[in-house]
Length: 270
Ligand SMILES: [Zn+2]
Image (cartoon, rainbow, N blue to C red; front, side, top):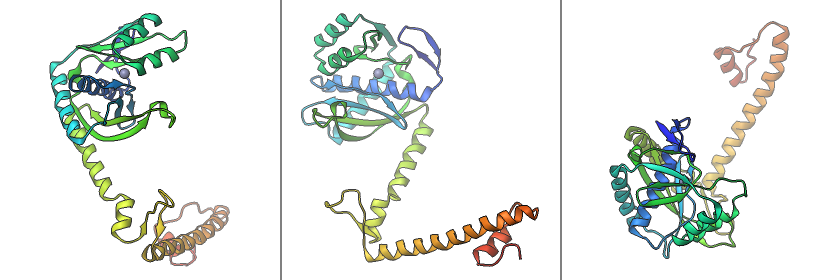
């Protein structure tokens, strides 16, 4: 898939998924501006397993809003808007974002180093301050999903306003998206916080957020694991010792039978 750089040059994507995801974040922001035009835009990067965009909107967004946004995003993708970059001098860039009433973007531009090129990307009526790169048409965002909503402070500081972050993910095809979503569902089922509670192993309390308080059953399991670890550890130390001897004896690897002997507390070389 081809990508377009801020200077307008086009090249084959080195990291296609990242470019798709970053473009998906712009498609999301465009959908937000269409449905909730009073919303202010903060930042919207691609991340390891998808993308997010931070918004300033009174009351944030509900799961129902996400559904509406997904349908609007689907429309934007179908419109197949070309994604075009352009560059502005600093003063004009600030004026441009002031006219659009985007205070967060104005702040970002003001903080850019003097020598930095200030680039924007446009798709249809939507323009975002952005260093790119992007895929060339919105149609390339074929398989996406908005996954969650969270709070996030502007620029990560609790002194600043709390914004609403919408997380999503995007892939180059529907199959990859489906298998990612299935994997996430499976991971949720195995989440230690869920299992720990269901199996009565540990609990969480306000006194130590994120810290598991072991219940009697959990303590038994924990101690059993520690005992097992101790046994293995003792055996491994034994193996290190034997290995050194073994090397001088010309033996380097342990066979599975030898390992089994060792696990049973026998001399692997006997
Ligand atoms: Zn961007």
